[in-house]
Each structure stands twice: as C-alpha cells, then as structure tokens.
Image (cartoon, helix red, strand yellow):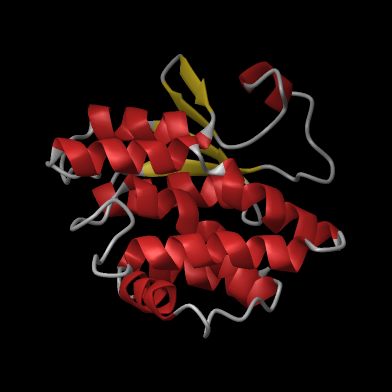
Length: 191
C-alpha cells in the first residue's frame, strides 16, 4: 500500500494528490502539521518536508520526482505526452518551475514588486498556452500538474486576477473540469 505524507496547504503535495487521483491509485494519507512537524517526518525525509511517498520500505521525497516515479510505476493513463518534443518541453517547464514559485512566494510574503514579477511569469504561461490546450502541447500531463496548484492558490488565496491572461484562464477552466483538479479546488477552498 502507498502512503502519502501530506499537508493540505502545500501545493507541492497537491501535485502528488493530483497524480494519484488521475491514475486512480489507492493510497493512505498521513496529514503532517507543517507548523509543528513531528520528529518522525525527519526519518522519512531528512529535510522534514512533504510530500513523502512510502511504498513498503521504499521512501521518495520531492514532488516532481514522486510524480515521475508514479507515472513510470503506474503507466496508465500516461501523464507525459507521447510526442517526444512535447514531452521534452513539458520536462523543461517542470525543471524551470522556480520561475513561477519565486514570485509566488515573494507575493505571499508581501515583497515589493512581487505582483509585477508574478504577472510577467503568468504572461509567459499565457503566451505558451496561445494555440495549445496544455502547457506541453496537446495533452494534459505532468507539466500542467506541476503548475496548477500555484495558479489556483494565487487566484483563490492571494486574489491574483487572471482575467488579463485569456489563454491561461481558459487553461484553468479546462483543468477545473477534471475530477482531480476539482478535488484540489475543494482543498484550496477549505484552507
């Protein structure tokens, strides 16, 4: 049985929850209080961070790595596009994810200029989505999953207005139709 060490408020955990839902993988969840981390979480991940995936005696941390593992271990449905170019572009986006996370967390902290820096990144994502339904191209997958938790939290928790980004807004609307993303919307609403 798979166990996910999770925290509802953590968008990195959201990535893994979405992949587990997309693949219909049964699992147990252990909620970790990020404000008072239990000592045992450091035994699962020396950094004390979630998510952590445990399967029998196998432990794996880092959401992007966990998502890749789950896609390899449970290949149906695949979450990388079949097209090698689209798959490569998707992996590049995941690799460059900090371009979104840095201004997002700066905005959460209230740093000067963070909203403008986030708008630049949202504009770049909007441009990427012009003429294609998903971040890596024609198919929903791990690149979309890597970004959507932060976009939903920026919109719903930080009041970031997405209306100026039409392709990005349409992408969010498409994703919200997926049960895995709808479930994450419920999590975000409960925070």
